Image (cartoon, rainbow, N blue to C red; front, side, top):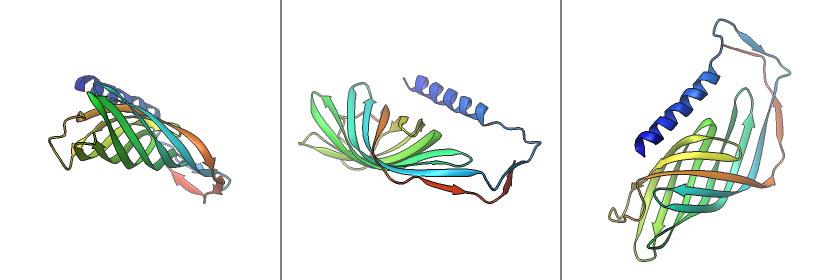
Length: 179
């Protein structure tokens, strides 16, 4: 499983890098009339996680999507993961994420089966933009290292459904040169 995930992430990065190539012999001018925008919204987060067993996730996120020269989306979220491993257990979670093709996130999760619990930290890497974030995460136990209900490795997908959009902010840029 590890080699397959590593290969998938390497291929995803290679594909992204191919599209990011530009002709470095020319200087491009971004005119004064070039515009960008930023949209802030509150969204429902629905996710599917897999670590040898399937689990779900439900929560809320404050999401920012920006489009200038490069597109970016990111946010802060509060959610709850739920799994079944002989008995149900849940993991209230808070974290931040950002993506513009290739993405990253970091989360703190408090897993409990209501008899024992464990606080865990999960850095994540993946791909996504705006309404979707596909990730691979590595759980690291901070407390109760004997809590073995959750695997150290996890893959998943999060979908974001906008509930409330705030005013879209359009803005212009100063003239600038870039390679």
